[in-house]
Image (cartoon, rainbow, N blue to C red; front, top):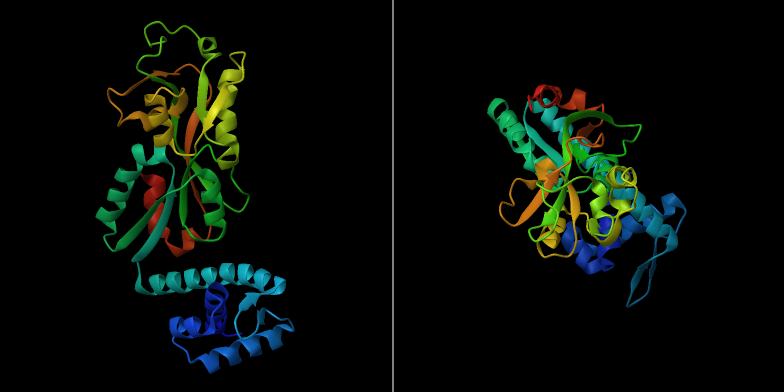
Length: 292
């Protein structure tokens, strides 16, 4: 089955319009129609319902579209990586990261790679733990830097930094680092935390800090973005918990209490597929040996 036919199918499945699809795919409309007909015959399945006015995906077509998007993406990734290997230590590496990673070691790590491998170009995407897992599975990113991630069996991982958590407070909050005694003082506070679905292990780790102090945090606002949570704290809408590395760029607008003695830590973790060690061995070596 020709990969170009599959790509043309995906264009039509997206536009649901033969003329627009033929223009977008740079193929004559009769040729596109023949390709789709031959594809349906080879699959022994109708992919589109069509009449003079409308084109719609059938249930079989919707399923095939989802599967082929994944397959074509993996093919394009493999083709690009093959060309990079042929050329040597050059090409592109796609990195997903959480907020605290960017605020700590990631900029220095990228600079280190660029100094040694100037022909390696990086694409940087700020995405949460859950989306990183999906994007790594689909090979839409090459490496993930997550905070307390749930690690799938098909991934390799290394904890690069264990960071203390901190309770983040608005400036007018009655508790301060000077009068703080124990976490029970926050039992009646309103909390701003990420949705559990965005990173179940991370949220569970944060919640366990307060459970051990004798209460469940009263979560009234949820956001997967650290910068949003901190701004909500600044506005007096509640308090939150963040790794210390997330708090470097907010002087004078919030205050925080570092939890130095709690056993729970923010584990900033690198995730990658084992095959990347063969595809880009020098990059992995530099990342693994980078001094934080």
